[in-house]
Every structure is written in structure tokens, then in C-alpha cells.
Length: 155
Picture (tube, rainbow, N blue to C red):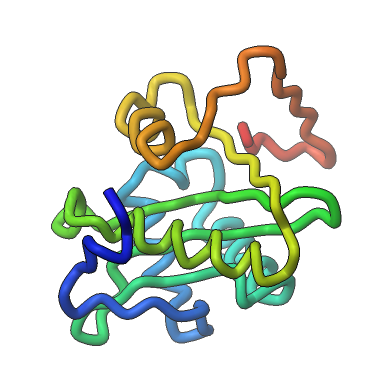
């Protein structure tokens, strides 16, 4: 699917604003992305990200309502895609692809040419989505985590 050929009518994509915080949290919650932390910790994650590379934290809206979001980050070496979420009633119409394409465009504009992302092994739909977009599963890398300060974030 070419994202330029498959545009969702009425979808506009823009950087996240403070007014979008609750909508983003709600989308993450609906997508099962908030089970590891309290509501306050999730809001803090959103606001912290808004302070760093805010132009890489996007929302998609239809009729003024936020229905999708994706977070991009840059560590000085690689771009990373995190937390792509599309509202249940708006899935499978190309919004995730359009948000991803816009984030990729922003990465390229910054000279970022390599992107990484993580997908939970049991997220069959997510694995298929990224493969369909041309992302390659890297079988030789294992992902390690260590939580500091008593946190329990699985990511």
C-alpha cells in the first residue's frame, strides 16, 4: 500500500499539544499500553516526551477528535518509533500507515536514515503491520532491560 494513494478522508496529522494529553493516554489505555504504570506515570511519560523532540510526537485527528498517535524519538544515532496507537473505531483504514509515513518523513528531514522499534512477540497484528510496511525483524538482537529506582516498566 502506498500511503500517498491510501489517504483516510478527514485525517489531519500534527504534533501533540497539551490539550491532547488525555486523548493520548486514553488511546494508549485502549491499546493495552498502560498496564505497567499508574495513570500519573503515564501522563508524566506523555508530558516528558512533549518536552523532548515534540515535533516527533504526532496525533491524527478526525473532525477535531484525536483518534491516533505515534511517538518518535532520536537518540543521536537512530530514530525510534514507539507507541503507535489507533482508536478501535478507526483501525484498518490506513491511519497507522499515514502516521508512520509522516514520522518517517520527519526523520528523513533530520537526516535520520535508520529506524528501530519494538513489538511484543504476542502482538501478531503489530508484527504483520510493520512487516507490511517494509520493516525487517532482526533475529540476531536480543533486547535487555533493567529498571532503576524501583520502577516496573516492562519496556
